[in-house]
Length: 547
Ligand code: FBP
Image (cartoon, rainbow, N blue to C red):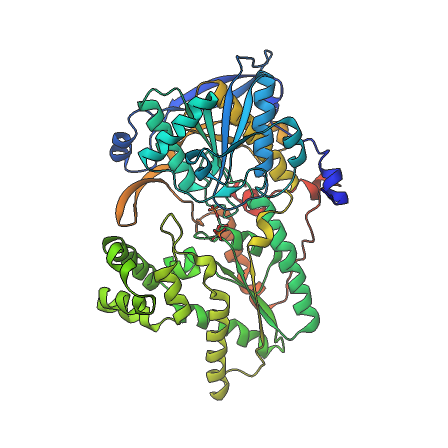
């Protein structure tokens, strides 16, 4: 396979790891945990894996050695830079424990476990993928592991291959399922452990013990590079307002991080729109005001960052989606039987009057997305909704009215962009390469320590890698009960942007200046080599959260 010069050099990169797991290590158990909320319900649902202690690995003189262990690994959900390094970390970890250990990769996501599609990952395969982006080593998928039949199919293949542990690399939903699987295998005394790893470019799988999900660092650096380039273009041509939507299905972390890196004129944060109970018109007016204020200074250009999940945060639309979810879950069979061109009418007829009115007021492209296109977890596929276009059109209409009233004197020409897939498979930054490889090593240590229902954790990540803290967090400790597809389910609590947190507060203190001035920052491309101040730089979000 042909390789770029960067790929050839990058293959030689040796990821940095915490000193506590570099040679010998020993496991220290901390205090018992409890779930973040709904303790009684979660305890009842997870009688075997509830309340386990947080564990940490501490430096010791004796290297970890044990009998050979066979492990299976699964990539679940959307791609995120660094997945290949988690797998190479698991591989190297297992081989250092015993060179006869084997690592199997299940193909195409969790479905590979159920359908018994797998490959043994050998050194030759692993070496091809070290420090590369993508999930193509074994592929990923969005099949949900939640049915007992699926768990039993998984058990069958694990027993056949002598697999003693599964590592599921995924986001909040996939790690929730990993925990359900761990509980089931433990209850059945199957002898199969399940360990999770925190993946998602969205950055919303984090909590007190999981500082960040992998991929967020690289993806936001890629987007920030391009946003910076667009800002420079806007400031050179001085004729366009660029509306840029950024991936992040629910939370606005990606958008906020990119704003902190590039200082655009306008940044919308979904969580704030919700907290302020804003309508779509409030959001449009806010942008139009900024456009008019800049136009009054002769600045007919600018940049607007829009989080992918914005639409779901607008309270009126959020209520509509909640009713839609319940209504569709209750009438799924009947709804499926309705002819395609009648589906929207069916929805209107089955919603409350208020929500039916809101549903009808939306452009058809948006209402279709809300009602018809769901992912396997029942989520609205917000990446398909063209919010950036919708907002630009609505702002344009408002400004046209203001022009007639003499309230707007400038020009308003727009360009639209959506950045998501561009960053999900980028070659991992040094941070993600190091963090992911360390997570993989930690997963192998949790396995050899007999742990199950844990997520691998690497903390203290704003410090140099040798000072990072390695350990494991019981997944039940991150859970609460939430409504999914019309039913209450145990799920890992999603981390939304904290409006009282350092990153948002810093942004909020600056945004008025950024709106009216042209204070753009141009981060440039990810640096894989060179001074540590550039090449090992973490996200601004992490820095501000740790200040
Ligand atoms: P995960 O939560 O699985 O990591 O996926 C995140 C994400 O990249 C979202 O930001 C985006 O909305 C979604 O995946 C897009 O999904 P798909 O790859 O199926 O189009």
